Image (tube, rainbow, N blue to C red; front, top):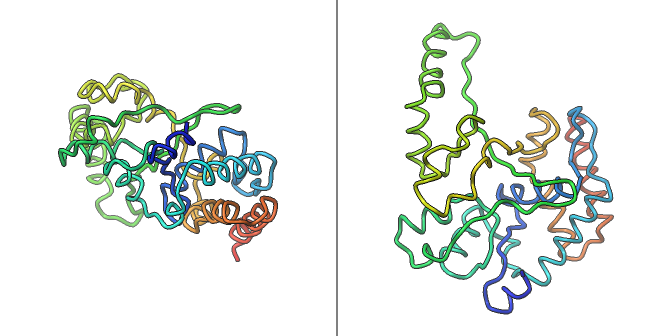
Length: 252
């Protein structure tokens, strides 16, 4: 499909650059093939695997046959803009590209639709960036703080408004809300059901930690992919990423 889209002048738009949209695609692709960056123990680097090599070969074909070189310099907004402006034929992104097109009354809003993240031999995996609210242990107002958090996230009407106000960008993360009314506000949201409760955080299956987050924030995965699609041998790109991740885990 990507080859045909490119021939039609509407290439695939997946960023391969130092931004989080790059990671939001690379993670699900790697997981769908059975690969991972760090094991679930949160310590052991597992990026050097046949599954990673398979992911890089997929990216190389996508970059060569389905995309344009500009994806190597994209920021987080570039794929959205490429679709909103009628250039990109397919992107891997939240619904924000469509929402903004609707808000700006762009003609492309009528031609954009959604589907779930593509799956692979190891299943269908999605990623998201949860926001966490914490209270300092030394706070003198911990109890009022807890009450405020319960108000924000515990009361159905407040949480509902949080979801509704973002027009399905903030998807429900609770099992009991899989049929939330926000999914009925637009027929193009029908395919989003349950996406919010099935996502993984960056670095999955490793539990969140400062070191796993540093691997994400250092953009090691997209840099590895960029090396592979621009001529570095697949095995060399993987070894580079492995060494970078091991340095992070060692604290150096």
